[in-house]
Length: 398
Image: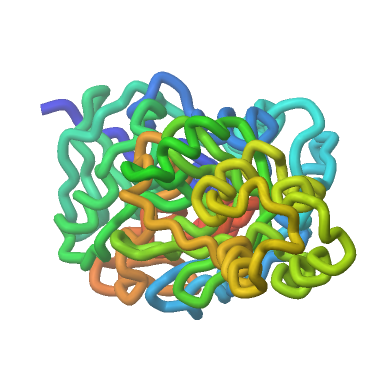
């Protein structure tokens, strides 16, 4: 049998968290190898943010993350914050800009961020190997042995940075979860997050007809609300508001959409009845909402009063229409699933991991970082910041 190649640290997964962890460990003088099953590393980085990579956010708070243990993320986020990552970006002379809600994007391309990570890896003498399938992992007294499609490897510290199940065309698999189960770690039930809603009822027909229309709304479910754009698509509802809400929605639940978040609709309509008595309701609402959407709402909620002037519409009807405009309840049939989801909710139970080092409490030398564990950020650069922060936390100890 051929002798195993020895490394201090092996990182499985060459994404954001894995590469960051690798060079952080390499800077400490550790010998590090990154293994990735894909033909190149950082594929999700390259496609993120429409190819511009929303690499962090100016306002990072623990409240921007979902986890069974909401406190778990605090230590790592404090240990490596957004300002430190911005300094790294500036040191590499990558031009960037802020969009709304503190989101930071590259001016040029997401390739700049990947090039930066690979440059840091090179400077820290990190070896990176692609097209490598892991065929078996065994725990030994001195660390871990890996049987792969390339060769045999041995390491003291093994880092699992294989991400979640989202976007399988980018090479996403459940590998990290299998490793967790192999070593007796609990998995929390995984679902697609930051993903568009789909419908099979009348909403699907409306969405198809309005496809491409964006509306500024407040969407809510389970006491959580997001003020963002909603986008009608051929399959249902997408856009930032829907993606954010999808992480909090459970199958079978209705979502609530406030189509006029800045206004008090009932007061406005009753005032219009006095000030614009001869006008049609659809024409008045078209000052605030797209005409196509108003016509769809008219067919649903005031078809019998469509061509009546405001003066002839009973107050009770106007109040009812106002209620629909500010609490439009829709029941998704589901989501588009992992095919288009930006993240995977849940994953490896953080109760098994140290929040300071990301090391498994019951399996010394085994670490989990990034999306594979039960920490999921909101849309807007939060998941990248978790990748950097968790990678940094582990990289200082592996």
